[in-house]
Image (cartoon, rainbow, N blue to C red):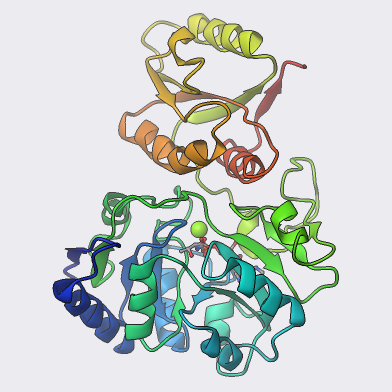
Length: 354
Ligand code: TXA
Ligand code: MG
């Protein structure tokens, strides 16, 4: 299949852009697939109410079909059609955080096929704030099933070039809307349990959610590497975001982390491995690795979130085989950053103590 790549600027949706979005909508209505930008990461979209489209999404991603898809809507009126009933918390949370990087799980209506929900009786719903996404969803009939637009197991794409890398020839169209703003996937909250539970941390934090609904729990498998329990979001059990190199996280005081990593790199037989470090602006110049990537300023969690996935991909492109990463704060958005980093590292953490 030929993949058509089109470019649209989010703050300039002109006639040409509208034409592209209409064409994208036609592709979806005919059962095809389109990769598109959202504020979190790029999505791989198909018609959420068409079981054949969902099957194609799983095939294009190489994703196990027990891993449910998020249904993206653009207008609040459309929510009622795909869920059995709208819980009171959903109205409150939607008022504050929709459109935006929050996914809510509710009981599904009959019109949502099990192919979309991975066999579950619940459905995950999100209303993205990216204007290209919103217009694309409307042009497509209102309901877009979309996982992140990467091949299963790779980091989620934060730029269209990564969608092209993973999906060229597998989708009809890729909409290039530039680099995404957030860089980590949406926060997922399950509203079918009481109190509601966070299944995946994201840009909207537990504190943000608790400001709106009284009590919110967190699935304890999210940060705990020793948990024997299965995560409640089926997708969280897979080793995601894994770079090809062996990634380890080193935790401890800054100077000790730097000397530990440098020591480990020096111990390697010269030329035997290509080494990489995920560092911060403050620490980068101290590392002796072949490739040192700056995630951002240590205190700028938003910047670190935005850069993390592209850094993991760049290590692959540069064939880095041994990677060390500093650990980041795990408060606020940091919890989402550390959740993704821990998964990328297969939970290999070296704790040097505080
Ligand atoms: O930011 C995002 O959420 C991006 C953009 C494209 O919107 N999408 C995304 O989709 O990250 P995906 O498929 O990569 O991750 C969806 C996660 C998976 O871990 C899946 O298991 C979980 O949501 N999920 C979906 N429906 C669910 C349900 N009914 N119950 C529990 N978990 C669900
Ligand atoms: Mg994903």
